[in-house]
Length: 299
Ligand code: NAD
Image (cartoon, rainbow, N blue to C red; front, top):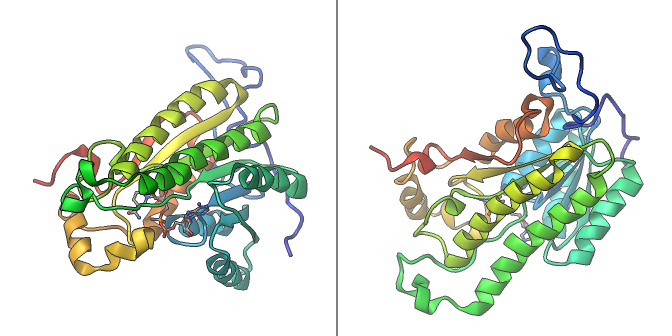
């Protein structure tokens, strides 16, 4: 059972109150984060993470809970989520789970509205659930003429429409309630072409980056900060865990200036940054967590 949610301080991103009095020479003032201990404080926040049964979503849910947030894990994989929640409960973390398919708009709305009704607040939503299906154009079946529309529509339903509907529900829950954070997991595949992965994947990941920018503008005056994380290759179960094949891992690692793929734990710092007061003046941006991949090819 979940302990009652502690309510501490203002919502992250709640920044639209009256301007504090400005000292001489100061050009602007906002909700300046306090001492170091408060910089990354998400204690008592209500956080939802979609796609939280595995990989990056699970790592994000875990770091949020470790930092004192009350985390609702949402995923289509009920068994995977049960295993994850059992492990996190054994560590004394305040987490709960909801089975949701983000391609089902009603299910997403019920998740978000239910979280607000049950916990009394919603501060941060990680819009993270995503799939990769179909090969990229490095193999004949991944060339543009061979892309099948069934795969295309399935990826669009989860990676684009699912993301949009989750952002929409989060905005509805946060608007007029003191602010919040919406953080979308995009990909380096949305920043440039990416031959190892399929057309639908690169298209949807590029699309969500511009969704983030548009929503950041829409929601800025309400103190709702909207940002994207663009991961490079991480060792997760995406695409059936394809990257666990050493040959595939080497193919991905070759593109990364740091020369390796990443452990899911390496998403923890960037996720905490974007969810916490440390990023109080950051919105509409894309934080690449990619070992330098988006900067250019390795030398
Ligand atoms: P993963 O497969 O390990 O985890 C994804 C989770 O999302 C799974 O638990 C899965 O059950 C869930 N999910 C899939 N479809 C869903 C749906 N319709 N509704 C609800 N949950 C659903 O993969 P991951 O790598 O952790 O992926 C997380 C996000 O990171 C995705 O958006 C992915 O595109 C993105 N990403 C991953 C990488 C990488 O290299 N692993 C790189 C860039 C971006």
